[in-house]
Length: 434
Figure 1 (cartoon, helix red, strand yellow):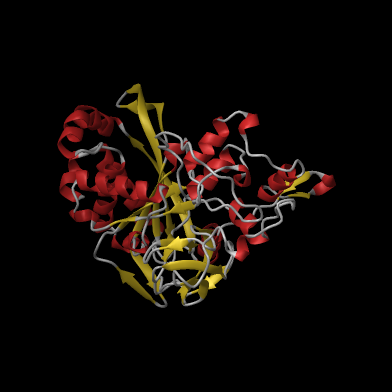
Figure 2: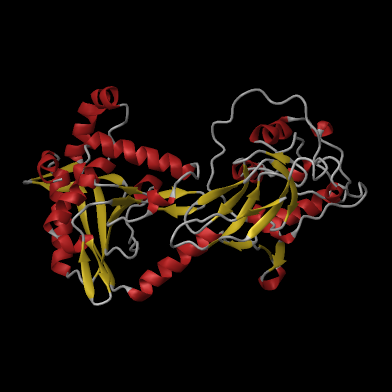
């Protein structure tokens, strides 16, 4: 018999939350097989079995906060415990109404940063109903898909762990094909997934616990606003030249490098070029000192289901346009599939965020502490502008620079943003200065 414990996470992470159990009590597991998912402030981490055996007892439930080294489950050797089907813990009164534990309800309510896209393949033809009284075992992607389709996982049939295919099959099956359930239990399951409380004047309100990552994002954004002297300056960029370059090089670039030529590589190169001329925007405050960094690790804000994450493109000054685009595409995919590592998120010196992909025309980005600068991109919109003595319709983008006024003066911040604008409107200069 052995204990499954929370592994060492990272120097700055000492605890996490049980996000999901991948195995149920009584199930056989192999050494190094994932048995649980642990949500930390930054990434989700799988907890693996230390040896072959049977998951005899789950000590910590979904939603529980656990520390590094804490025991979360008991693992028995193969001959020490009965199989899952015969385990006493699995025996339940078939006439009783299943009531999920509060921690399990909270975890089902919390948003999870995984994607259910790309489901394919034939639906399984052999299934078995979930055992009464046992919370269904499913990945974050499966739970998200079930929430999107309004499906109670307790009613989904599957073999062991419920898969996205099981959820899809349940959604497509006729009502009479569903597994028989006691009539009163369905409304209770819906209430468990979306508990309603009375708000003002008795109107319904759904109470949903924030995920650990969302709580961390909230705390850090408030901390930045309370500790930094944050100001924002704005400018606008004529995107005509960049759009022309992308149009002419779209096909050759994709054919040669296997990745699309987007806007982010241009903006990353422009930011690096401007940071070389205005180094205080590539610094951070350490007590009474300034740490002026002579390297350029640019954070790229990526929206995921669990909240905003900022993976980092390392040594952006040494990367080609194709390498930057490839790095960003890879990091974005890892963020959407919840596979970012701590290394992907640590150590950025400056951040770029693109609200334009969601249609934002103008916004004030918040600093990503301890950094002292962040550039906000916005949507491209055709507007009439003066070109010489004429008025022309040009594709224009507003850009915003939020900065920490404690070490960056207004003149330096405005000059930085003007430099970014100049290089973007003359893309050839990026080859020389970026």
